Length: 221
Image (cartoon, rainbow, N blue to C red; front, side, top):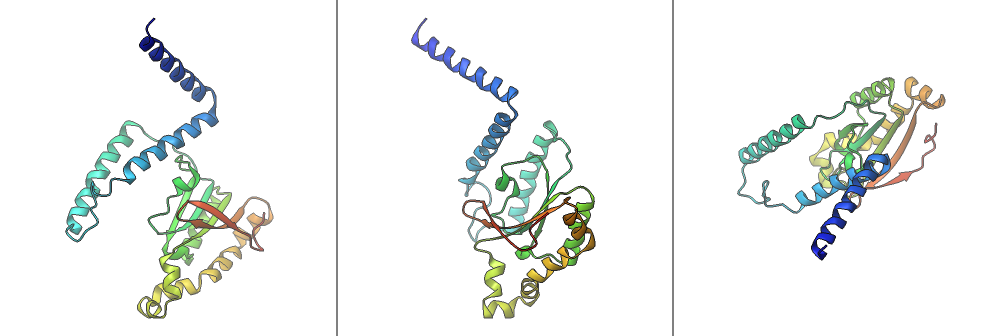
């Protein structure tokens, strides 16, 4: 047998072993899937000039046309490979910042997460209602996040921006109060007391996607 054939056979055996490992080991399958997702993200990440070119020449109409085209491609793939419907057990409150991706935060694309996106991670009464409804529907963990390099937080401490964006600043000034209001809701308070709900506060490092947990007096079952 030639060296080329030996090499090809060796690669084939390794590939077969990898396939068997993945099929027989759920953790290996999960890790491989996460690795492939991240590989896809990294392959697309460097293509800054492929579609949404960041210069003054691109028009809103061109951006919309490209968004529609990308959705058509994505929808076609989803049609060929439908997702398994699952009921979320985690709810994540996150800022609307485009750098934050819950799938990347946890390396999981299986839709186990409700995601509430707001400016500055502020819980308005409507978002409080949605999270309470999520708890009634089976959510057992709520992660309330803020993040580094937040534009809303920066605006809240800038005198000029406070004047320019009064509605946003009003919400940011009340952010901690809104959390306390939510924690005091009977449904939430009782679920925590009964051990059916865990609420955590964390700050996202937008450079690494790492969650830095912040300990607060009500962070308990």
